[in-house]
Image (tube, rainbow, N blue to C red; front, side, top):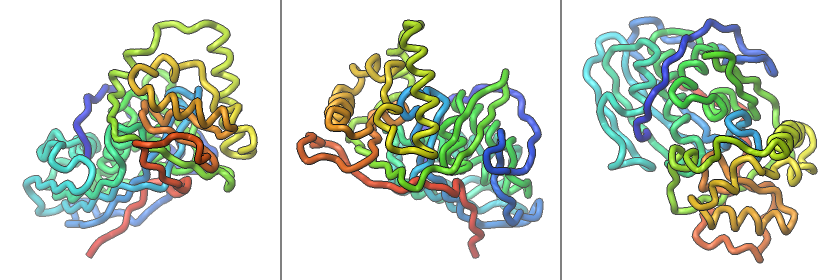
Length: 322
């Protein structure tokens, strides 16, 4: 489903069942596979956008664009087979280093595995494709071992990326605030305001998270840090209660301008949209732009694939297959 990524280590913690707005919330109970049973099922994972302005590594939101993974395994299964269709086809590894497989193995499942990945989330565009692959693998591993989804799922997924914003959004849906306490990852889910209607503008250019993080300074002025704290807090309010303040809420001084050398056209489109009163910011590590509202005709979006998406409110889904 995706290029492989390095995994940081950290302890896993027990968790409680899901409750809306609760820290470390898990997913609703689903039908579990009997441990050891031969099973086949579909995991559908939403894309995600992160940061949403100044909520760096903290704010996330699930988007109505999905990667689907058909999984077969369990009792009597042996070997490994992987088929990739769509994004990443011909590019990602088809062995144990495949990101979905690595995430499955991180749950403790060691048996045979057959995967068919149908990917619609573009890779390396700031739409959470890595997190979606990881979440798909973690959920598949839990299903194969007959475990209920709980916050161990978030912990395992977040350990791969070193932050939980994208993974939490893909797991839980809606709007999430993610943070860490020592080596433990936490997240709280909130219901998005129904008036929040995102538009993504996806360029053909790819972007490396590692590269764009390398453009960030070691320190920022205190005034910029204070500005970021206020705007991140306002973004939570805007996305869940009052979209009218999204223009102010998505204003950023913390990271976007520093990263402009990596994607100048992205910053140009953001600035042009904002000058016309359209809330816009970089999606994750870029180069995708996420905006809220109609895209004015006078904004030059040549080279960008413009898509209006719903906010996904359900998160990852598992469906048994015959």
